[in-house]
Length: 271
Image (cartoon, rainbow, N blue to C red; front, side):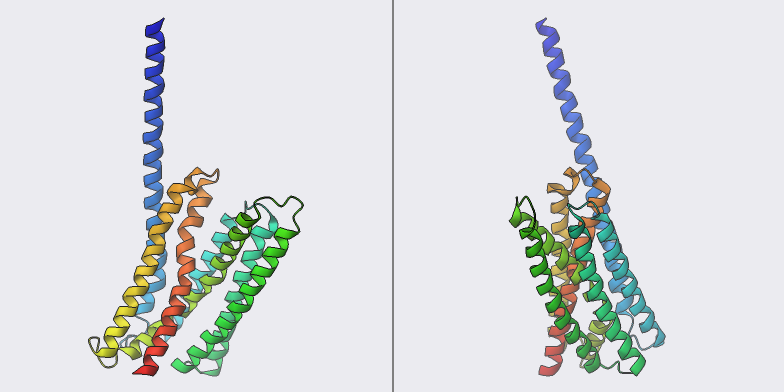
């Protein structure tokens, strides 16, 4: 009888170890899938645009790069919102998408007006960015007010702080992704910044700022792997959570692009 119990305990222990090994292997594969997906999206946003202002390429290439950035932004916003379709309420699912769409439409509208009017210089691009930043400030105010009001109107106000933080974070992610539309404008500013040479005083500042931006984006991506290990793989919607967590750092990095654009504008004015 004792031997039977001992064999049963040993079998249970081995089964638990096997389940842990399978779970660890699945988690590693999912982390690799997230990293690969992020690398592909970043490559589509950064690498082609980096060649948009090469003198040997036709001017139409820049327009195609604008369309490429716009397409990646639209796809990211849509996939993120659809993957979060199982949020706790319709408000949590729909409201961040509406704010993200408003941010995207504003940026696209001012860019289209600039293209039609023929004003595509560095100063004109900076005007578009400033207008978009003003729009983002308004959208963030709307996000905070409406999210707080929604939490206060709930019949059962449990975990208010957690729900408030989650809704605000999701809205911030959706609003920020439109910053990637200004990637071609950022490259244009960098092209002007390297006129005196890459290793000139101005060029070194631009290189340092570019390195800092890449480090921030890489840090966000690496952090998302930790988010997946802690929360994502434990949810019941594994595939959707994998998509959401892989897109979050990319979408938030739109803010990094705008900050880099602001920094490049300041540097061009200083030198």
